[in-house]
Image (cartoon, rainbow, N blue to C red):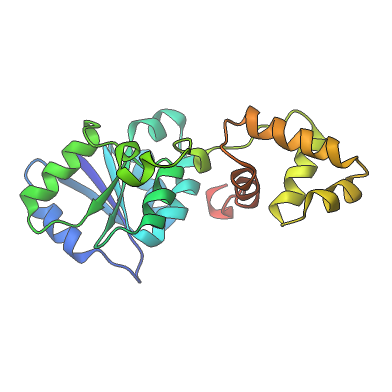
Amino acid sequence: MNVLLCETAHSQLQNVAGLLNDAPGVNVVAIARTGREALKVLNSEPVDLSIHSEDTVDLSRLIRHELRDEVAESVSRVVATEAPTTPLIVKAHQLGFDGILTVPQTAAELAAELKAVLTRRNPLSDHPVIKTLDLSPGALDRRLRYANQTEIGIADLMGIGLADQDIATAMQLSLQSVRNHIESLIHANSLSNRTQLAVLRAIDWSIPDFA
């Protein structure tokens, strides 16, 4: 199993790195501390699974979108944390992660948990917290699709927090027309609600280094 560890200088996963080196059947391809480093490794080395610290969870979306489709689809992703919180679990599910890894005590336990992620034995969608919610897996890992420029304008204004009436005024549309467009965007992009639509538009950007 080839593993990439993604962390930052502020949240180094020393325990995970140490356990990975001793974990049976696990090969640490690299430790990446920037998006550029992670992209370089993923595009040039065979990686089965990437492990992310909590503060690289948002960055993982940008990294994934800059990868070739076949590479992005071949790499499983997991968040490593000392104590998973409900917000982190939900966020990881919405960003398309395959699992939450509570850092174990031994290398053998870590290897077993990583194998379970790769074989989809414990999918994040089966977590008790997620099973109580009506959410589409990976909703925030998508690129929005639009039918026309009007929809792009409406999504832009939603992304900066405007209310429907303000959007209608700015776009010179009726309030009902704005609401119809929003419902159409939610449906076309398989989202659960308008909040996801606004968030996706607000984070629909790329780091220049990735261009």
